[in-house]
Length: 258
Image (tube, rainbow, N blue to C red; front, top):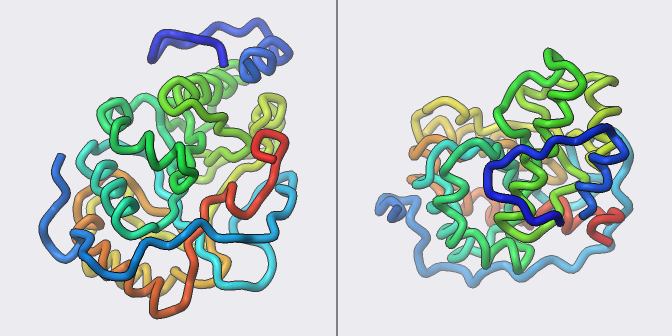
């Protein structure tokens, strides 16, 4: 990974150059506060499968896996509360990073040990959360490259091949640009906690009951505090249903994560 100053956009002269460069708060005290309960989940032992080309919105096959994914990152308090919850519970998460939000810099100490162990997987959610289909080619590339480099600098990992297009908006042109950079898997979802805006905590629990199901990829957000007050309720749903949380790298192999 090229050593770069934080939050500096590299200028790339073309797709080949871009690919070469790419290679190179206290948590709340309500019911969401992790309590001394079941021991943390160990990393699952799975027969991983090669990542498919193209869009995914669920996990392959039959089973009892749940990919709990969280996006954006406007709130340091929410990110660090998720990190504390993961540390206490063993819940495994894929975090889709929007690099422009300073909360990621402010949360790095809480996240680095979880990323290093593989319990939390950072993935690419662009730099500034635009509708990629509305941008010219060079700006689509910059949105992905800039956050790729930011994740590499902050956490020392390669975020490829998974990217989440903001609002789920992508098309063949966007996918081709992303794939040329190694982001071959637009990652959508099969169920949402719908908390990109602020929702009542009880509504989030109801949505988890609807969507925390086997082999689903479920989307939440790192933006608003209500979800952090019901972490224990969400974990109870997972436990009641016999689900095992996984990161995308737990399930899939790729050339970046063999």
